Amino acid sequence: MEPAARYLRRSDVDKDEPLVDGRRRRSQDSRARIVQAMLDLVREGGVSPSAELVAARADVGLRTVFRHFNDLDSLYREMSAVIESELMALVHTPFKGTTWQARVLELVERRAWAYEKIGPFKRASEVHRHQSPPLAADHARMVEISREILRQQLPTELAKDRVRFEAIDMLLSFDAWNRLRRDQDLSPKRATEVLQAVIAGLLEVAADVPGKVTAPGEG
Image 1 (tube, one colour):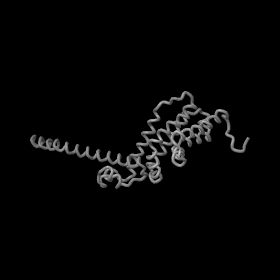
Image 2: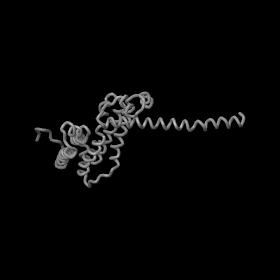
Image 3: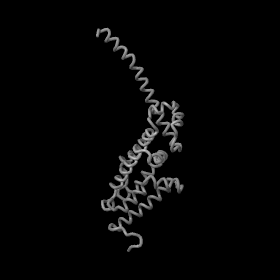
Image 4: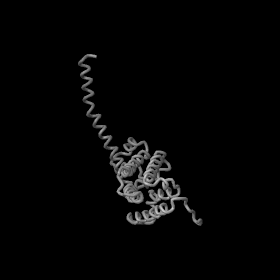
């Protein structure tokens, strides 16, 4: 190839690069707007916003939505990432409590704060989780992380007490929080007090009776 030809070809590439970069930026901007539209609609209470609603809120065409996301399940994965980031932020936050009992009760307050932030997203995710293997996998991973956090705060004998451990873990779950907040119509403060009172009772029982659990009617 002649030097001049090589120069001309290189010039053509240089001329096209701004166009490619511009298209890439526009594509990234469209994707970000679609994700934000989805999050906004869910935050406002829409547990299953349609692709049409997402496109309208993002001010893009319906084809643009499906060009960036093969299906709405992909959008829900993005939402799941938001849930995970909020919960993982708590993992790296040091506890204030100086005793294990205080730290367990502090878990109620920490999760209450997180659940209030992710509540709309969590409820929307639950609607689709049973039909989405990726969402189910995300859910299972976060459940296990939450269980491990609790396990690390408990004395070894209590962490191995299957009945009490499972009871405390259930009380710290989003399901328990959601029941108190929505079905029983409690304020965040009152819901926190209820959960802390019940968990404190379980911790006192564990401290007083470190051995076998007495079933109702025994003893």
